[in-house]
Length: 362
Image 1 (tube, helix red, strand yellow):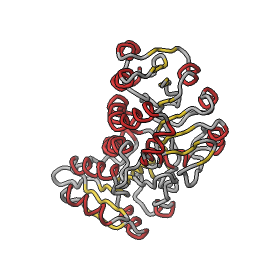
Image 2 (cartoon, one colour):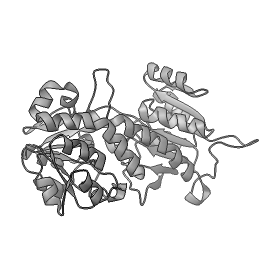
Image 3 (tube, helix red, strand yellow):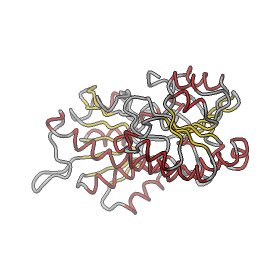
């Protein structure tokens, strides 16, 4: 199969669809891989490293997209990128089409592009093997982001997360006890914060209690969320409903009752956001203030550690990429339910996507 790895064009997306190590695996399996010039540069991968791994370097996006039967991306394609993809091509990426503009989805349907959303690859036990490592990274980075934005020079309250003798630590509230939320809780606790985790699933809270000592857990009712947010210095939203827009769990009215200049980190923003006041930001201007709260709503948080994120994603995704490359999309969909559940568009039909709602310009 001919496989294309284009350079990501979405602003501040520093990751790449595959590392040289991943290219080597595919090349050794007999596939032809086209990598766009400088596609991996921001993640620390040079063209020469790709060439040594068996890739063919191409010097235009038209070639990277147009020569491929299978396109490997990280971010959802932009409008011009959709025009470079040949009809009937298979594309894999973190697509988050539930929060995409309707015309982008319509373009995929008209071109009969088969789109595979990595974040929806799901095993029988309900786990998301490809999304998991990036959720781990996002959760861990949430603590770093909070620590920085609590600093006085960043406009924060001037609070040290772990406190010090005679001075209490920061109050951190995490809504969502899944992979991102539990990783955020672990790192915040390691920094010495006082951490409260809320989730609708008592089993998720039980797992967190077993793994993290001294964490406080609560069922995520509206009343409990409002009570917890009222004393929070940091609120992390980490809510996921596969294939759907993230539900709103913190309302504007809740924000009005919070302490001024608290930090709101919405890790669900790539799915539309779970705070009523959330809107997407970027790495160059990551925060804004609304209702007196500092909002951090960057959709691609793992891109801050592009090299680690690319390797982590690749480790989880390679079995699925290799299966599609070896057997073709139709056979892969027929024999692997995990891949079939991740199909968003196929043969002009919309699949496994409950709704979409625009939160980005493209």
